[in-house]
Length: 280
Image (cartoon, rainbow, N blue to C red; front, top):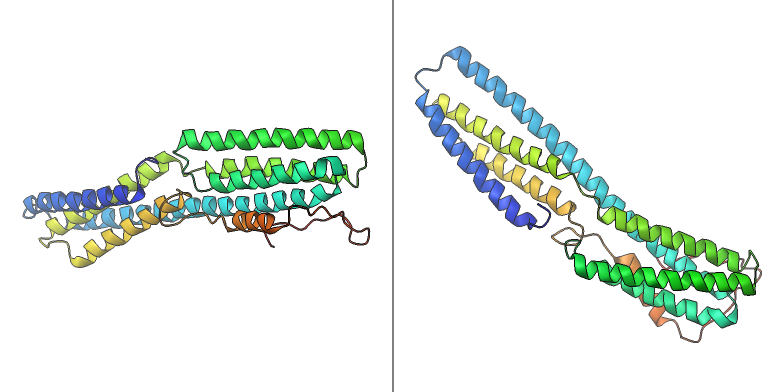
């Protein structure tokens, strides 16, 4: 289902629900004369129960998709913070490595910004960007190792290595959050329950001899709208609701606006830098 646009799924579900309501209504009309008061009351009870189950599934699925959306947004902020901290702490490295490390970090954030707008179903393009980012990580780690050999000081090389390690960890956490979706079986259960509930509503209307009112149709449209939002929240890189990449873009802009020759070591009074490109 993830490869199918959310709007297409919503339209299919809408027509399936309305078609199911109409078929069930006509079926209910056939048993209109044979229905007793007890059977009508039983149908009404079942209708209320299925509506309750549908409401529970909608609330559960919406909460699940919203939690995943928020975790993806937090992961972007965390990664921007980690890259920004590593970029500032690169000023502590030996002069021979400082400029190269900061150049690699600028290239790295460019890749992460580009990866942020690639849909997860574009596996080839996304895999290429992830592979390039992994190679830059290896190069940065090699520079960190050389820095520790040249100047094995925990206040200089040690702080940068710590920031670099956090940056690599945040890379994994962000990619894991992006690829974590609402289980498809939950979505299928929700859609199946919705269509069945609407059919029961149509059948109940047919049994009492009344066509489903505009209120029932409005309920169907509203629930389809909620389903569309749930699907959209679960697709962070396409659709109407996308995870904001503002923190990484702001960090990228601040790196590019910085003069290339800047390589100022921090003063002892200021202590080791911990500020980030993603402004807190």
